[in-house]
Length: 151
Length: 441
Image (tube, rainbow over all chains, first blue to last red; front, side, top):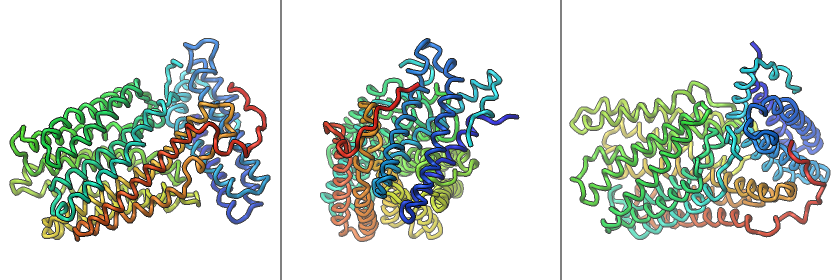
């Protein structure tokens, strides 16, 4: 009995949420800790995004968007996920800027924006995309879920 | 962008937004009607002004917002976007807006307008129910939230059916209806349509956006079907209760109240264990909502224990204020303060994907300070409305508070939406461009 994409990536979403919440909490009292927690969060999120973009999505894209032929990753649902990943990376860069400038207020405003973006993105993945990936991978007896590169 | 899985096809911005921007102004209309009716309006729940104000709030503000949210949520939580979002949103919005305005005017002494409102409202809800059911039916997503959405739509159909019968009787097209029918209509609306939908959406929104532990799976699996079964039992027992056989009716009522209290208490307990330190207006509104729900449950139970209380004309008014204003409106207003700035942000991002880093933050689109002021105005409305239910002369104060809170909400949302038209994002100049994001894929 191997694990599912849904179980592994959903658990990792919660892990990233926790790290971001810790950074947010620390922003009020302890800027050093906030910086440290934010960096852990950023790396963790980046690992997650890469596991999806480099391992999961390529494995399911041929099944998910078969009609679209050569434009596999430009029009299907995974391309929307990829675009939202880029939005998150954009916000991460802004957050890095506010960390460097020690701008706690700006940091919190950006965290709120990133948090909402992440959660609605996670909702779509956890409710629809991951279960779909599991069905596709189960059909091909893939063990991909076990090999996802997550810490 | 035709593909097998369409969950990413978020509806066009205008589809939900038109509902959200309309809703607050019906709150203002309700305040005007209450002020116009004055203290005499609160003699019972059957006075023209009370009926008009109640429907302005339940249809114009609550259902208006919930329909908009549903159009948006179907794609996010159920992977089931509406097939023709523009057309559906257009028809439902126009019919619901006109129908609600006509219905309220009809209650105030123009039965002809009331008759005209009925086909409009039936059309609005029928179009919504049929298209949402169609999307849910063909979606691959399963789970408690899509299931609860489906059940709440069924409850909405029942509510509309009872409402149609009552409306035809009120305007003289049918013989005067039974009192129990008039009680079942708001019960199905509040518990079935609003309560079940709120619970189904909470299963997703509370753990994810407020960072709480998840709801217990047993609750998410059984609450919505349980509430619906209890409502069906209540409806079957109602005619017998009118004949004097009240035990089955009382038991079914207790089951309904227990289900709602369970939902409210679980939500408050989860929120107590949230992992995010920061409070925000949505969170405050949610807590007011859950506290009111528990208050309503307790008040209902007290009235069962002391039947004299339940017979008093204040009782249904107080229960109505707690459920409608305290529970439902709090949730809906709180949600608006989150969903509107996010939709605006998402749209700005889609319009200029290369400028992602130059976009305003949510805080700039709709500052939380505005939401915090709305929390206070809403609390003032609730307290004065509860007071007015017992001391009708307070109705002017309650109307004033409701008017202020509604106008504040309307202006806040309109300002957030106006960000869409500003040529440059408010903080565009403050951030240096660090290179374009890499292309997807």
